[in-house]
Image (cartoon, rainbow, N blue to C red; front, side, top):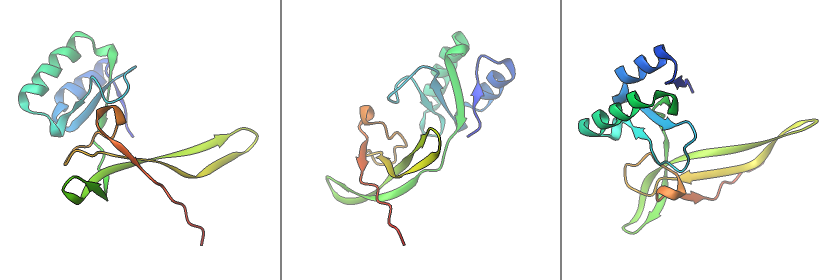
Length: 131
């Protein structure tokens, strides 16, 4: 995923010019806090975030918004599509091995792209079947 380092002048300019299309995250952030999801933000939220970014650009990176898959998910109203992402795991040492499975995170809020458990996201079983 292309990553724009906001402490670099050209990357900061690109980020500021394209805030409505990018995800902007704190460099040392976690859990989906302190970030902007441009396509889901209001104009007011984007302008407020612009001020924060200009005040401390070295604290942020920006990336294009990814198109997440959806998966049928049990929610209060029944079964509904929710966005998911897959975190595969690779073990490295003398050899490199893919772990047969991974962590699938799900955004439980309708339309949300934020899958972090600290932001109301959940997890799903991830199965790898051999043929």
